[in-house]
Length: 239
Image (cartoon, rainbow, N blue to C red):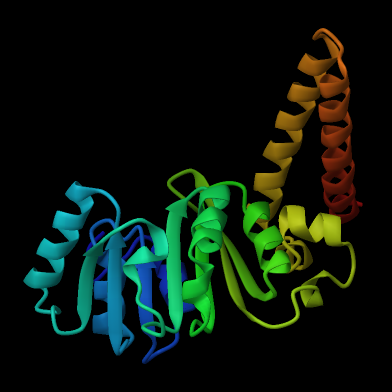
């Protein structure tokens, strides 16, 4: 992977960044994504934000080597604190857990007033982002799921709008697995949720054999609910 050829998951993120956008990439690592966007998608301005010294220095080096210092500003800071008010209209956050991405958005939501689009790629727990969208009046407008190097990733795209619009069928199911992804039911989706289903069944069996308490019972009921939702989707597809 380099600034001309991204990994499949980052290429999927890049696809949803509008041409000419002013973009902040949070947790930018080597700044591959903003450099690619500057070279291939004609973004007008980019921020590569990093909280750790090592990746920050790597990002600085790459932006300088690509001759993109007039377009991309490399900044060190935690989450959205690297952005000034009104500076960007698109934010990308990739390669973190969904709960961490949601907390970054929550902690910096005063910086989102000028932002028109969020392009987010959680490694796990995408439900946290979907819930944050609903709570903060962002509409999930598209989703993608893909497999790369044996790992499955989801990309979620949000814009300001009606947060309930994608969930016109079953909100609990949509939050868990993705309202757009469940409509497509592609092979990667089925692979991911078959594995999750088997994992939940193992956890449930372990809880059955554990000392029983109100907390154990609550956890069992939560898992049963998830199993029921996902099993129905996979069974409907196979019937």
